[in-house]
Length: 225
Ligand code: XMP
Image (cartoon, rainbow, N blue to C red; front, top):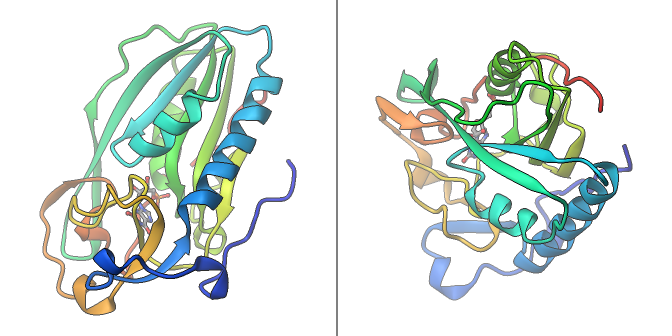
């Protein structure tokens, strides 16, 4: 895989738009940079899957903005399906992973590309990949917008990665904190005091339960096309 842009929390981020300054401490990846990188990822996917009929499986709900932008750059034949995974936990402790939405399409013998927002510990993707592998796709690959490299507890690898980011809890461009901030057009970091004392019992993955210090989890290496 070609080099993945590494993002640091520094000057590269840019100014926080005035309207978000009360909540957002820093912009990690500005809108224009996201747009450029998503276009580049789409170009690679387009090239790699040329002549194939792709099934794109997106994980709910953090992928919504990334997915919408990515697929609009693709012209190859594709079908879209969704898997829902929730974590049942409390406070900042990641909980048990439960599937809340199952696949509708039959992926047996198909080229499947899993799209997720962020690869952190790898636990979520591991569970998802195990489930998909059991359905005997022709190939199984993974595309994530963000990756936190040092945090992996499961040996999951992504074939397409937008950005490598530091170990920070990020929001925006689909990623939430307690179901908020998904609609930020950039990826940013919240003021730390907003993250403190998160108390959530049940959320879609990536919510308050994950707080600043806790992360999620699950992994297996994707089969090559
Ligand atoms: P794991 O640890 O299973 O985590 O690889 C993957 C899922 O955890 C969520 N996640 C985050 N969500 N900001 C978020 O809004 C983050 O910094 C973050 N880190 C992990 C996310 O749902 C991802 O799919």
